[in-house]
Length: 377
Ligand code: GLU
Image (tube, rainbow, N blue to C red):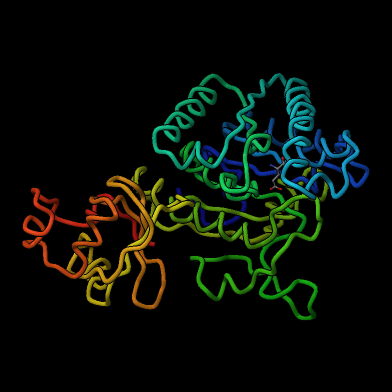
């Protein structure tokens, strides 16, 4: 059974493992304190899901907002990176304690994991996270995950828990992601405009869909906004994972929104092999190869990328690094593992494969990116 409607996200058969993302604005009140009653109702819903046989991983924001209040920082702790890092250190203790206590009330054990972007971009560390999540779920615990904001600097941070949730879902092999938001889904234009309509179902993140997102989050407490939610939907979709956005503000929001079907469901693309799903969700690339129209056609037909179709190499990368493949119109067509360092790659630009040995002076690989190590976007 596949996920084809929002309420399938709570069905233990269609969705045996769900990643639930809870944003800062829902968790923390305008007074800077946790919204206790709302949270305990949510935890009761998660406990009920567990009792039905569905596993749940929580991705919880709120550390910065809670810590900023305790430290008396302005701008909710988001004025400067150092503030956010310090606020998160203080807030994360409170946040983890809160979840642990609420789950214990239902006889459940909460388990905290703090991740940085690099933990999921590096294949070995990604597999470590996968193993830990799998072991925790098998042991019956409820993983509660946040970004490790105290050590993450601008270059190495997700910055928003929407994409973190999608990446965690991939790592854990989840079937669905549910983003509890302060809006009930994606609107076809700025939701404040007259005539704006909610889009209930999205098949694939197209340019038209991306244009619907208005930048910034309305609450000012979190850093999400619709753009990061669409990016999360894209990461999830590429890995064959469905993603829903629903209004998290009412009490016990999961049952309510899914029961009414009020939200937006992003349908997944076909389920990819795990390694290709990881590649597709990668966020930082070391470089790129730009290719011509002929090569773009060959890739779409399932071929490896050969040097004859490459017109330019940008960035510095080593053999085995993940690079982007850019099409003639500047669009990112694929991502894959480079078979050559960028320097050697540049020497091969435009040359056919049989010339590689003469140009490089060593026995070459047959492709710039082999099709088994590439994911088309
Ligand atoms: N990790 C941040 C926190 O715990 C939240 C990121 C977000 O707003 O999505 O405060």
